[in-house]
Image 1 (cartoon, rainbow, N blue to C red):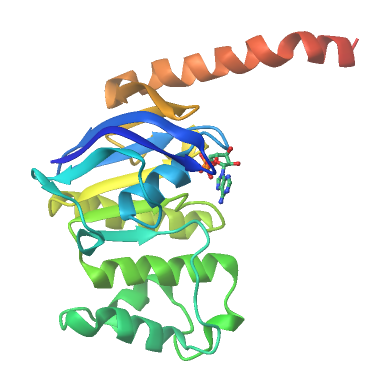
Image 2: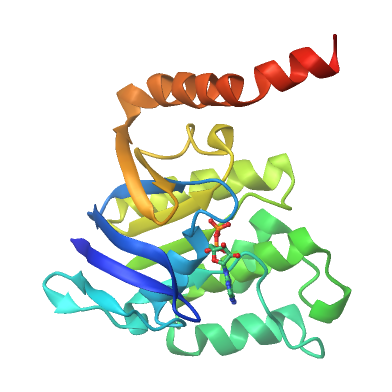
Length: 229
Ligand code: ADP
């Protein structure tokens, strides 16, 4: 079980995460939904350790979590541009002799012999996703994995995440778009201004969608009525 307890973190003395609590168990795909700026990336960076926490704890099975247990897909993955796709995967998979990059690439069809510099945004994301698979860690954290990737590849990512879930991985995903989540997540927690407001189980997703729509209407209907009058 991954347990995040009263996590506080921020920038320059300004807290972004204001006492975040979250639990996630193996075999569950857990979505973190929040508007732009809600703190999703800060949360993931703090869990991974890129960012230092100010208060609170993050534990896996009762032990302090280290990034050796995590594969992290960043929103905009970084690559050395002079490296070829296959060289990148070769380095990442150095400790995982079972990882067969050719077989995995039959799914994503990337030009692994080309320099990463020539890849599109979506291709880079797919390469980084393959890197996650090569790392084979118990916790997968994916920050906006579906943005910038075509529909077909998104569906492939969904299918792979479902298999990984069945292997008992702990999977956290973030998105600011609910529709990219409902087909793949077992549970969705809504992050609002650095705190989780509520966690929804699959049978409650319709309720979540309705409450988001109602919120939006409350906020913009009167302005739109004026603009379109
Ligand atoms: P999200 O991923 O939900 O869009 P972020 O975690 O990226 O949200 O950002 C949360 C808040 O932290 C925002 O107000 C953002 O402006 C601020 N923030 C993010 N990164 C930095 C940074 N490096 N320095 C200062 N403020 C930051």
